Length: 342
Image (cartoon, rainbow, N blue to C red; front, top):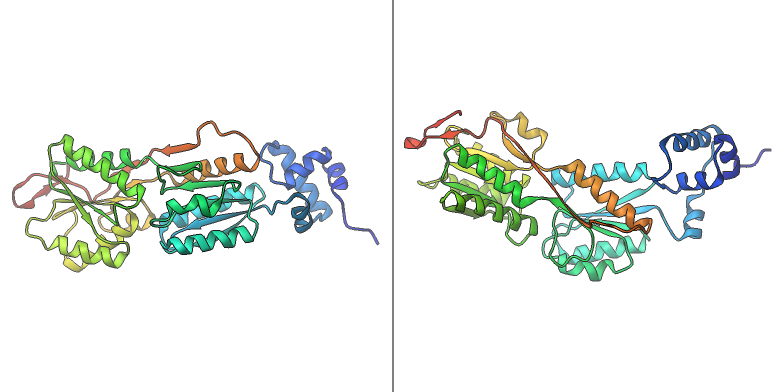
């Protein structure tokens, strides 16, 4: 009986060197696409199955990446994870996804589990109040990339939206429509990305000589719904509401439905984070669209550079967001909260 095919046979079948076969099977992105396809096709024809466990033991690499996120139900994080998993898979890596539930102690425990699994690197969205613990928990020798929630003292490469500019542009949009009483609803100012969004909002309001109305509405959809419902009942409620993330937006939409307040006739709504369900509402919700694809690509690039021991020229990436204008933001002309499409 014929034995199992070897890497040498794959190389002969694909008409490439043994080194090229090894690079392809190890997920090296430097191999030209045409050669990579030849190697993979040869593996299929020969039914070559690499012994990944043995290879990992020899090389002390497992070709697995840990992805740590606060909440898989958050649509922004779920979209990021999907993009990252696709990128990792294309490079020959498997991902292990763990959630922290915004708990710093759970974050440390999950990082410990990933280290026990001997992951080759970690991509982390820190939980609330956990940024100061990351360096100790992850360690100096573990490739790591921080996404979205960055801290000033993070020792690792990072990727995030340019939150200051995104919030500034969103607020400027509402101001350009004539709104002067604008509220920004946030989960908590203790998160770095939220702090940056507050800065951008307050900067735009200050330049317009308008008072910045900051509302802290809680960490869950239910808390946001209760807080925003109370806001909607105020006699001098804002004419425009800017929600700082998708969970707050969901709470605002629920509050709007419960209150019977009409969007945009009685209040304009602008959301930070854009997802398909925003387009399905009547009217569709204007939004700040974070560059999920770019964030994922840059994060994986920073991770792969660390895995392959390459230098990183620009370790901290800030990606531009895009303002998507839909029917929920309209012009405000003053008396009686009257609005008009501009």
